[in-house]
Length: 371
Image (cartoon, rainbow, N blue to C red):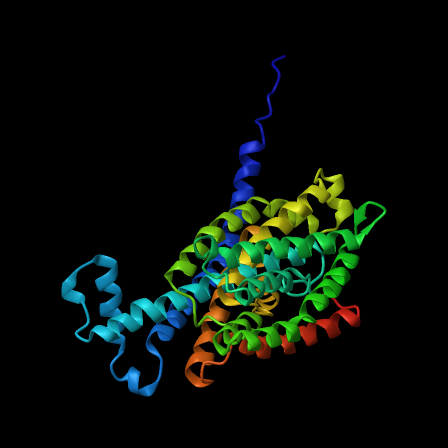
């Protein structure tokens, strides 16, 4: 009697899995498109809006002409007013590009840290990385060494001090040779408070060194994009691509860590080594952002929460969506600070946005509800 062979089910299973995945991908694509359109619109408005006397000359048509002229190299598109072209291309565009990069990098780090530490209140600011990096950047300004190492001394010092802050937090949070996410966050708060307690000393020393140096120290402490040029933007782009690729490759492990360290261990994740990789990449990205724009709080905290509501917790979608939302937040905040608030530090505006949400999430956590 001939045997009946049952056809393999793998092609059928793959087809069913693909059929279930396509609607999910489509639903996730819509928020990406919407946020990208908002980001592009906000960036173009940032290039156009300014003081009323300047806005009469730097019109949307002039902005378009300047962009086309420099991108294509066609002299026929050069704006008729030379200083208007200079304002768009040399001042506003690198500042807007820097805002996109800084906001995106801080949001990336915030999303990674929240999953790594299994705490929705974690971000570069609360775990001590930003304060350590800010301390290194301010120390270079205070010593008058901004031109050292080819102009990259602030970035290097911010990374070293940020890495030192992370190492200190890591050592303080170890219990019997293992690191607890809860104690890590508490240690980060303590270390961050220590670095921030040095702020009055930095300001006083800066005032004795001269008004210009004091203004730069205040900009580094409270966050400002005023001094961001093409050099800072290119450095941010280079460091950002490298760090973002590292976090992207660790997205699957971040998904597992969100279920708890024990679950990740049982599924083959070397949690201690993995934690060091994420912390190192996050420190590098935070240091680059702090060296360029100073300490800007709450972007790395707010953006991942908004992204998680839009695209879910899977990090392949969460990380890029968080970066887009963080970039949009900082571009809008910088426009508000520059145009309507007489160029106050952009960190002040992001704090006004972030503190109410932080308080709401903290209240939810204290009530035992999921955030």
